[in-house]
Length: 247
Image (cartoon, rainbow, N blue to C red; front, side, top):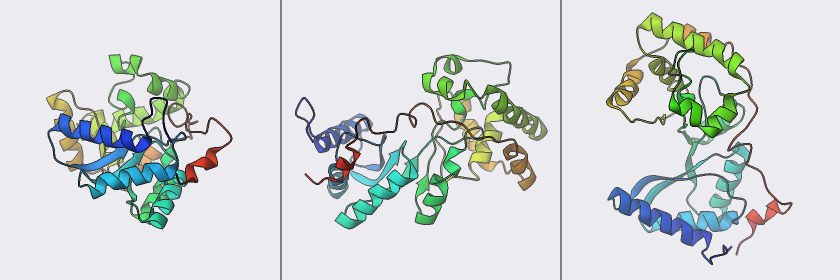
């Protein structure tokens, strides 16, 4: 499929990879993550383009972000059929207060040995701030605000339990939240703009929560509606089957 400026999806992938390599000063990328499910480009073309950059040695492995389990399964089934590289990791939103990935994505990934590398590990700061604290990120992160604004009351129950455990262990809320997450996934993604953020991440790896601690954090959980990026993950037309078309 060609865009209006006559650049194909494969051309775009190659351009972005080359730009990343130049910006990073590297000769290859260990894990290249496709940002979200693309309804505008045939799936074959996407996988063919990603496969080509792996074969060229510019990327070692490919992952995907912001998709549903059925979409990941669909993509990897086609990749296996065509002899293309398969997605080896998925990057979704997963925290102690947002656990929708547990419905289908996590069981699927565990069965297929696909890595879980969630983003926004601290819910855009909600799991690192006392209930009476705020920050610029909390106020200005549009998607996070939209995601959590209707669930503040139910989320506060879990956040308060994070606070209680942080006091019990004499550590930060972030360390408790990340320590919980690390019992569930392969690797967490967190923003770090200060040295203390890096130290928090390192400390959380060494912090071992007990089974009772984990149950204590999980017990109040209630389902969240899908909003933001994942709520937008739907075909804009009725011809979504075009993603199977080989060009």
